Structures are given as C-alpha cells and as structure tokens.
Image 1 (cartoon, helix red, strand yellow):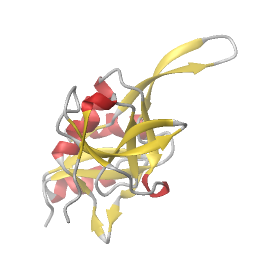
Image 2 (cartoon, rainbow, N blue to C red; image 1 turned 45 degrees about the vertical axis):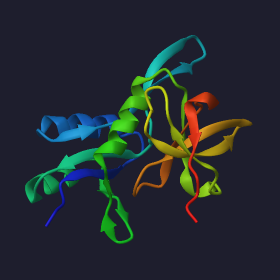
Image 3 (spheres, rainbow, N blue to C red; image 1 turned 90 degrees about the vertical axis):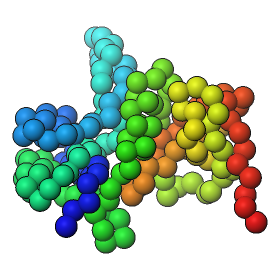
Amino acid sequence: MLNKGWYVLYTRSRFEKKIYEELVKLGLEAYLPLYKTIRQWKDRKKLVLEPLFRSYCFVRIKNDKEYLAAIKVIGVVRYVRFNGKLAIVPDEEIELIKRACNSNYKIETVETINFEIGQRVRVIRGIFSGYEGEIVQLKGKNKVLFRISNVPVSMAIQIPKNYLQEIQNKK
C-alpha cells in the first residue's frame, strides 16, 4: 500500500529533464527543480536552466499503477529509499524548493552528510518565512542550510541575518 506524496526518483546522469517530460506525458504529476545559471563556452555565454539536484526527480504517486508507470520510464534507475522505506518528501519541503527556485537568491546544493550540526534558525522575513534550517559556513560565507527529508542533499541559501531568528534548544 503506497502513501500519497512526493516520491523521489534516482535517474541516470543528465536524464533529469527527459524523465520529467516523459512523466508529464504519462499524465503523472512530476516536479524537477531547475535554477538559472550562466554557462561559458569558448565562443559565448548562455543563460541555461539546470537541475537543482543532479540525478533526482520528484513524482506524486497516487496508486500502484502510477508507481509502476514512473519506474518504467527510460532513464529512471530506481526509487530512492531511506532506512529501507520509499523516500517521501513532504509537500512543505517541495514548496520550499519551489520558492527557492523562483527567487533571486543564489542557491547551492550540498551533500548533507559533510556538515556538522550548526545553530538552528527560523526565517522570519522574506519568501522563506516560517522555514527552519541551520547556519553553516560554505565557501567562507554564512548560509542557511535547508535539509530535504529522505534525500541526501540539501540547499544552502545566503539569507540576511536580520531575516533570521535563533531557535532555542529545548533542555
């Protein structure tokens, strides 16, 4: 029995956009977070959309038929599992990712396991208001790290200090 929610597909390298398009063609609700970046070639620079999380695509699964249809898409390697169970990302975290991708903030993705647990903060102003994360130092700058449930990647976003409120540790 499947839980309704956003399941995480692990994809072949550089197949994210093709898989997303195929999922949509099949009538499935899919989400591929993209961000704008400038790519440099020998003769030109171009603004392109790149996947935020390499080799990952999200799909909302409602039943067994949709579950099987998604896994059969060419380029899908497997469903991501966390602690032996299918990884499901909550709607609130998908909304956070969407807000980040639609903002003008510079976003970086990082492997979550490389960081020590830092100071917990809550964003109190701006488009990320209400979300919680932790302060990390990345490339010499303090950023707020937002961890995505059941996926070994996170988003690090530089947010002004006056937009943050310290979360007191419960003792």
